[in-house]
Length: 110
Length: 115
Image (cartoon, rainbow over all chains, first blue to last red; front, side, top):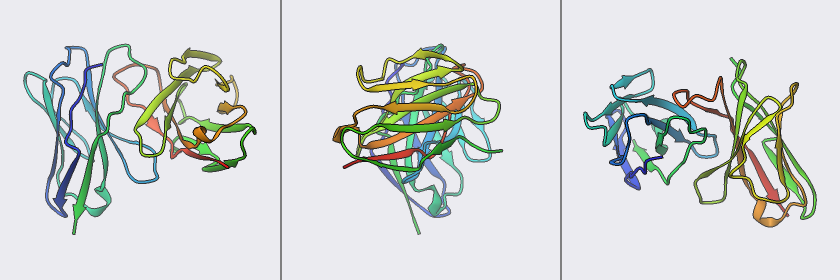
């Protein structure tokens, strides 16, 4: 699986859009980009995933650059409940396990 | 729709005892994954199972740990003769099939404490 690089921590004001970057410069053509988050004391929560195209669901949007070497997770209107550790994971075709890095600790401030 | 159910949520054992952690996957999911999160560390894959089969146990410690997913009932992660270093949060995830384009959905974990 390709390695991912994320900032250790970020802050965002409540009500603003939170943009979380992820670098995955060694990604190959058949690898998906997944985003999960872990709120304190809970299990990881699936947010969104994509291969090449941008994706949007009720939780977030995923923007993948054309060369696929980086992506951005966008939480359009952050709330205090979005405070969590966010993990960007690249998953290879045929790979069963998810490889979690250290993630980005996102703090939403009132 | 019930999510992935894990029980117990908290488990306390003394050194040398056995710990059994249970995981019921989401309805319609026949693939189960176990992960461990040591204090202040990231999640690490342990084992991947389908009904009655262990597919990948590359992350399992070589001794004392075992997992099963019987035809009927929940998946069980069993730790024999527990030691202090086994204290961690153990998370189970499930998916419909094992395809890489399908997300795994996680339970809220079992927090194991060893006295």
